[in-house]
Image 1: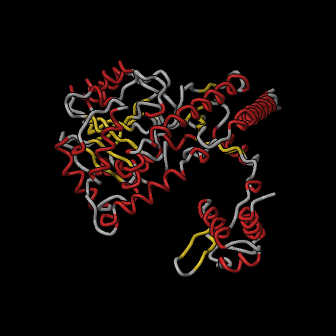
Image 2 (image 1 turned 60 degrees about the vertical axis):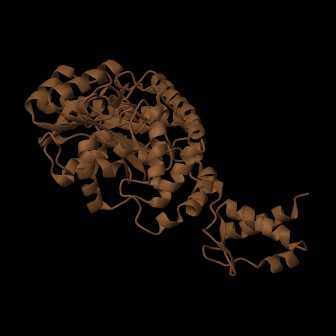
Length: 461
C-alpha cells in the first residue's frame, strides 16, 4: 500500500495533468489536506516538499504553496528525431546538484548578488577555473582570466576591439561556427577564410595568409570542430603557434568541447604558446548548463584592460549568481563527476552514429569520423542539396542542419549536412540515419530520372 504522502502527491499531479490546477494556482492548505486525507500535517508537508524538489510547486512564507507550471507528462513527448539541437543532452543536466549550489551561492554571495560584482569575474571562481583548466593543459593565473557571459560575448568583443599588432583582418576556418560568422557580418569586419577538411588545413597556405594579409587574429576550433568534428594533431597545433609568432598574428582558440577528448595526450594551442599570442576561450554551455551563460577567456596581460573596457560597454559584469554557483560546483568536485559521465555518453552516441552511417548511407555519400564531441558532417552527392534533404526530413519529424550558413559566401557549399548527437536518443540514431539514407536515394533517383527524360526528348534527337 502506498504511503499517504505518495497518495497526496499523485492526487496533485493528477490535477495538474488534467488542467484543474495551472501555473500560479494556490494549493490547498496543509490543514485542509490533512483533514481530506485523514493524515498528520507532517505527512502533507512531506508531500509538498517532494513536489517542490520536482519543481512542480513552490512555497511562499505565510501565504502557502503555489503551482510553478503546467504539468508535462513524459508520454506527451513526440517521436521527433533531433539531429539539429546542439545543446547538451537534457537527461545529463545536473539539475538537483546545481540547485544545491545555487542555494549555497545565495547564502554565500549575498552582497555580491545585490551590488555590482568584480568586473573581471568573482575572484574565487577564477581561482577554481584556473585549477580546472590545468586538466586541459592550460596553465595560467586568475589575473589573466575574465569571466564573460558565454563564449559568444567573448568572440563578439574580440572582433570589435583593436589588437596590439595593429592589424585589421580576421582569418577563420571554412566552415566554422555560425555565431562567429554572425558577429563578423554584423560588425562588417574584414575577413579571409582557409579551407578545413578532416585532413586539416594546408599549413603552407596558412603561412601565406599570415604573411600577406594583415591578419589581426586567426579564429580556430582545434578540438571537435563545429561543424566537422575535426581535431588537429599536436604537431599541427605547434606549427600554427610558431607561424603566429613568426608573423605577429594572434590566435583565438575556441576549445568549447576540449573536455570530451579521449586522447589524454592532446593539448590545446595555448600549451604551445611562449609569446603570449594565444587567446583561450572556454565555455560551460555545451558541457554543462547553457542557461548559465558563463565562459572564461584567458588573455595576454597587455590586452586585459582594453578587453574589460569593451566588456564594460556591453554588460559591466556577468551574472554574480551564476558565477557563485559555478564556483561552488567546481570546488566541491561535482563538476569532475559530471564530466566523467558526459564524456562516456557522447563517445557512445558518436560511435553509434558513425556505425549507422557506415552501414546505411549510399556509397557516394561521405561522412566525417570524429572520436567524440557533438558534431558529424555528411557530404551529399553533387546533385543532392542539403536544403532539400533537410526539408524532406522535417516532414518526417527528423531534424538536421544545412551547414551552408557556416561558410563565408566565397566558400559556400550547399551539399553539407551537420548532425549533432547531443540531444538525440541513442535508440533513435540508427532509425534517423536510415530515413536520411532513404531520402538521399529518393532525391538522387528523381534527379537521374528527370535528366534521363530531358536528354531523350525530341529536341535532342
